[in-house]
Length: 126
Image 1 (cartoon, one colour):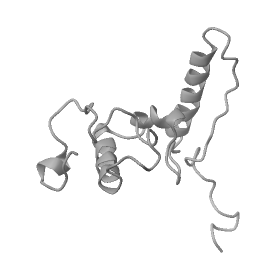
Image 2: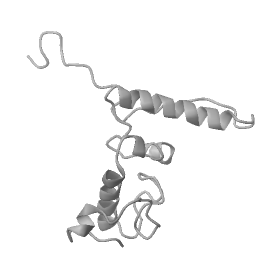
Image 3: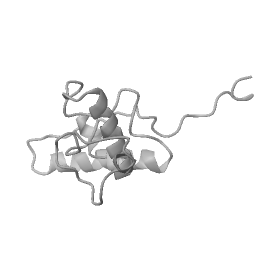
């Protein structure tokens, strides 16, 4: 029987399809920042419980700035190098999926030399 006698195990906390909806009044000073903080804390809780902030459809602009909480700079650079290889003209979901600025003609944010794939001659910056 799949998952044992009690059924399948529960999914991790947040499988990337979590879309926290934090309601706020943008006309009230400071509420936008408080809402963003609350959303970030929800995502942090998911990560601390083994969940993910990414889903099968990628990451939108609201969650992009939280990607470094889940991935290292090298992870993000590698993903962006692949994205640039398949979409060099930035036609697919422009401005979304990865926090910017990142590679592809934008100033890199890395704090140390070139990416390991670049050093190995397997990737290049565009």
